[in-house]
Each structure stands twice: as structure tokens, then as C-alpha cells.
Image (cartoon, rainbow, N blue to C red; front, side, top):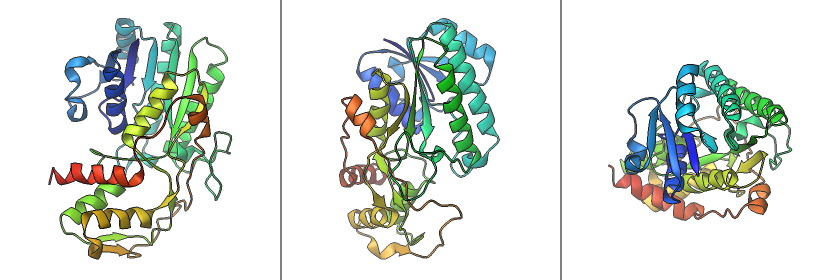
Length: 302
């Protein structure tokens, strides 16, 4: 199958690209710059196309050259610490809708977009695909806007459109500023880790299992929204304590040293039954195995 993947150099995109290469597909990826460290091992097996997906002329040239049967669109502005309310979200939203429109016009069979659990209203309920939406950031609002427009566009085109909503990811090569790499690297380097009390409930899934979930949706007949998540609750405290136990540095954890951030949701947990019941997807990693593998990866790079 001829597949186009945007955002392939990213944390999740690199694993999605690797899966399809391993399956023997004809994989084309858009590259905006020279940052390819996460896909260096598979670059010789990829068809890399310089393309800024926010530039219509470059998108036209890319699609005319590739004419994909399937597009998995992961590219979105996602700089840690900046992305939630960055104006760049408008560019990502516009690029997503334009890409889908152009792919449909070229006869692409299937389009898979990537959404976020932040599109949902957060309370104390497990989140299914029918749960109400209530975005609290520009990022979440733009993701939800893309999902809503694509839902209506799907009624007007033979191209199948799926929207995968991701929850929390972790694993090797994650951005160092994010929660798990911050805890892991601080402990490995002997630094005190100041955290909130850590009672926030989260749904974490190893990045390889996230990529496998996206690939499973892409290769299925599912359309509309599908949650890609573990369905298993864990608190931030439990994660921190488990990392500290594996690293042997529980003495460096300072739980409760920081207050909760404003608007930090206390409960985010997915219902992943749609994914499980309509594909052959099963996670390969439980939390302990995933954390041990991730810690070993970072340890090798100290």
C-alpha cells in the first residue's frame, strides 16, 4: 500500500512510520527540516519529501508525486510548554483541513487524523467517544474543530475519515521536558524531583502501543472518533514512585512540594473498547515493563 505520513520525525510519528516500513508498505513521509534523529534507522527505507504542509503549493506538489491510498496525518505544532495556547495551532488546523480536501480530490481512499483527550470535557467519568466535548485550550479547540469539520466532510466524499483521540504517551526519546523524562533524568542524575501531591488520575500508554493503535485504526474500516489509550488508571504519584523504585532513588522524590497547576484535570481515563472490539490491537507493554524499558533507554544516554 502507498502511504503518506506527516509528522514522521515526531515522537509518535516515528513509531508509526517504523511499523508500516516493517510491514513492507511503500511509505512516503513529509519532512520540514533536517531533524530526523528519531527515524534515522529507517530513513533509507522511506521516501522522504521536503514539504511544509502549511504551504498549499508544496502540498500540491507532494500529493501529485505520491498519490497515496492512505494518509496518516500526525503533523501539528506541539512544542512542549508552548503548544497549548500557541497561535501556531491555527496554522495546524488550516493545514489539516486543506490536506484532507486535497487528498479527497486526488482519490485517496482513507485519511486518519490525530486528536487529543483534551477535546473532551473532564470530570470524574471514563471518557468514551460519545462523551461531551469541552476544550479548555486553543490546542484542544483547534483539534476539536478539525474533528467536527472532518466529520461533516466525510458525508460529502468517498474518502473514509477516521479521527484517533490520544491520551497520555510515554517511552524512549520523548521530549525531555515532559513528565516521565523529567522524573527519570532527574533521578538518574541525582537531582531532587519536586512534584504535586500526585493524585491526578491519568491514562498512560507506551508510545509503541500508541503507534500500533493508530496503525490498527488506519488498516481497519473504522471511521469517526476512536480512543487510543490503555484504559488503565494510574496516579501521577504511583508513576513517580514506580520510577523511583526502579531507579533506586525514592529519597529524591518530593511529592507535594509543588501546588497543582490551574485547570489541571484530576481524572482522565479512556474507554478503549471501540478500538479493542473493532481491531486486533492489544498493548504489548504494561506500565512496569514500559517504565523499565524507558529508564534503560535514558540510562544508556546519560
